Amino acid sequence: MPKLLYLISEDWFFCSHFMARALAAKEAGFDVVVLTRVGTHAHTIRERGIRVIAWPHDRKSLNPLHELKSIANVLRIYRQERPDIVHHIAIKPILHGTIAALLANIRHIVNAPVGMGYIFSSSDWRARLLRGPVSLALRLLLNPRRSLVIFENPDDLRHLTTNGTVHAQAARLIRGAGIDLSVFAATPEPDQVPAVVLPARMLWDKGVGDFVTAAQHLKAQGVQARFLLAGASDSSSFAAIPEDTLHAWAQSGAVDYLGFCSDMPALLARSAIVCLPSTYREGLPKVLLEALATGRPVVTTDVEGCRETVLPDVNGLLVPPRNPGRLADALQKLLNNRPLRLAMGKASRTLAETEFSQEKINAETLKVYADFQDH
Image (tube, rainbow, N blue to C red; front, side, top):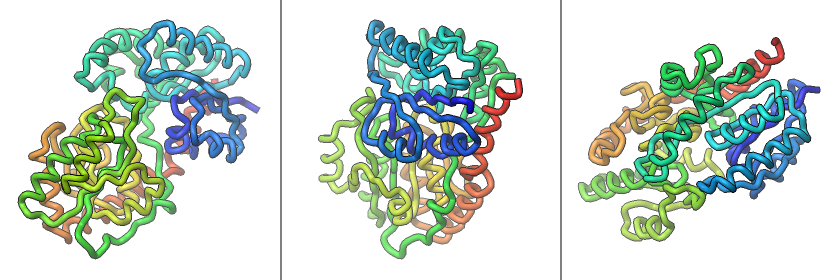
C-alpha cells in the first residue's frame, strides 16, 4: 500500500481544505498520514482513520535556529515514515518539507502554495524582508525532477512559470478545495433586511477594515442592511486585527461581530450577499466557493484567486483592492436590487456545479498522484 504524507501547518486547515481529498486518496488505496501542528481538530482527522503526527512549529518565527530545528524534525519523521509521496501545503511547509524530502531521498514531492499570501502581498516590513530570500529558496527547491507543483489559480501558475521559479511541465492547476454540493445546498434568500457577510479570519489583509468603512458609509446614507463579520482573529498571523478593535466596531453599530462560526451552511443561508475584499494573493478562497454553492452573489476584489469565483455582472461584482468607496458602491448596487441578487445567486450555483464540485477536485488531485505512479 503506497504511503501519502501531508505536511500542513494547522490541523484545522487540513480539515477544512484537504480532508475530502485525503479520504479520496484513502479510498483509492493510499495509507494516509498527516504531519501538522496538533490543535483542536486532530481528533476529527483521527476519527476518519487518518494517522496524525505532531509537527511543533511557529508560523511567525523568523529565528533561523527555530527554522532549522523544524526542518530537522520533518527530516526525522520522513526518514521514519518513508512515504512514497509527500504533499506540502503552503509556503513554509513547502520550504521545510522539500529540503527534508530531498535529504531523505523521498521519490515524489507535491508542493501546493495555496496562494502566495502574506509574504508576496503585504507591505509589512517583515514581508518585504522575507520576500527576496523566500523567492530564491522557491526557485531552488521547486524544480527537482521528482516534484510537481499544484496551483489554485492561473495567475500564480503563469507568474511562477514565466519567471522561471517553476518549470511549466511540473505545474498543475487545480482550482481550490472543492465543495460538497449537498452540504452547501442552494437556499432561498431570507425575506428580511438583507445581510452582507464577510466570512474569514479577522485579518487586515482580508480587507476587513475596508469592509467596515464601506458599512459605515452605507449606514450613514440610510441603506437598510446588516453587515456581519464572521470569523475569529488569528493571533498566529502578523496581520491579525486585535479583538478590542473588532468589538469597538461592533459597539459603534457599523457591523455585527459574530466571531468564529462552526456552521457555515447556516451562516451563508441567512445572508443575501457574501463579500471578501481581500488585498492579498489568495489561492482560491474556499468561503467564496461555499457562497457560490449556496446560491449567493459575491462581491470581492480583483486580485489573484478571488477573481476566479466571479463572472462580472453575471454572478457577482469585482472591485479594486483597498478601495472602500468602490466596495460600498458595489454592495449598494446589489442591496438596492433584490431581483438582481437572486439572478446572480442562481448563476453562482451553476458555476459551483460545473467548476468547483468536490468530486471534480478530488479526481484532479488523485490524477496528480497517479502521474507519479506512472513513472
